[in-house]
Length: 145
Image (cartoon, rainbow, N blue to C red; front, side, top):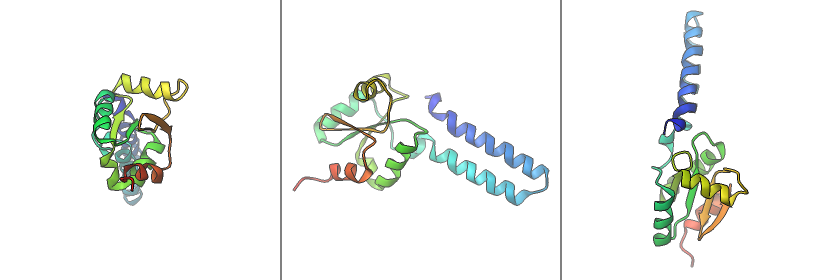
């Protein structure tokens, strides 16, 4: 749980430090801009941007029932962020599993990626797909004609 917040907290602290130095140098406008940029980066890398994570076991159970893909991800991953942003509202229809919160999820990703924890790994109909195109993932959510 704490591991997911390391990067966002570090970004916020670094931004605050740089902003404080700029303010002490008499440059309040630049300090505000720098702090804003760092806070935006921190929020984009926080677990709050992603839909609520569930366990790997629960995601597999739900996927078996509704046929929706399972996305294995981790905070701070730029490719996961790209997938989440490009999917937009459709992302909420997927089952998201944070591999840093669930050791079984991390093991499933390693098994699918030759021992590497490469994310995002999207499992569709039992087949893993590493870092797939977001448009392809969106198509997997659409009902087949």
